[in-house]
Image (tube, rainbow, N blue to C red; front, side, top):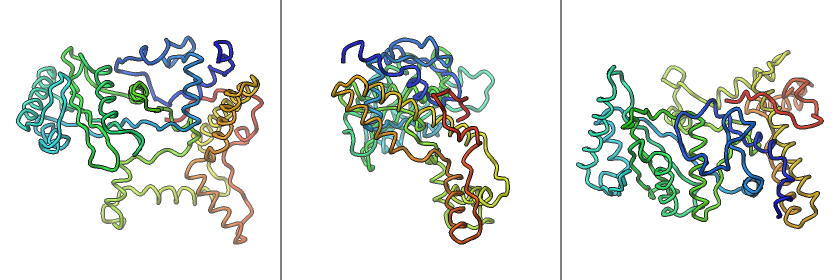
Length: 378
């Protein structure tokens, strides 16, 4: 496409549709300007505006379902003993190589214990109050199984770590290939030599996903880092910690220590909604519905703008965008989706005629044009 044709996309609306529910400003500095083309003049949240060419490339990756990268905080280590145990785990007790931020390749467990002691000593020296705080923080970075080879992921993570942490925080990198898909453990010292503390927020995590995806694309791997809501998902992902707790407590009775059951909680809330004469309209459900209307309308606007050019490549992308939106899941929470099932079953059994109200009347009215709802998702 020529430079003028690239401008047909509704760039401000797309940037808003792709904006993550970050929950605050970034606390750590990184290579934002290397990844993005400058700062947004309209972005009060500090997000960077994409160029038209970058926006088109991102739109193509999203609607053609490029694999989404995964970056998650997996734990915190407190003190030299705990950190040494963690190093033993990621090195499989000396069987796997661990690469340090200084480029040292380590398999000796004694050397790993010495590094753990060094990190703890620095943390103690910079902690005049003596309060309990983590010595390090561990992360796991990966791609969906079967989409990327282990060597490429390992190389991309090392490049990511150099860009984000080198010269500020010490770190260790270890590749694991003994599971269903290769992944990399990245452990970062929480105390920087300049006195800075490593204390990431949600906004930092989203930036790291973008940075990791960028490094993979630099190595020829189609990778993306978009929020779930930008792909039409309203139902929040159940965190792995909740899944693990649910699995460990499966089969225990109420008095036997079972503290969390996501499915039971959803069922109880859905039944309450379905059987209530005046069901609660939760603000987050209404806000999520409004945001999904905006996101889907923005994609429709982009598809129409592309189709209007009449160019073959634009028509193909417009069709992909339209198909992507058509395949999006319903814009309802788990609670409301289950409530709908219960109420439909009650209707079939002749117990009632009421249908679930998935939002306020104002939220259910079709919008004449996309609007930017207040971000209530966190």
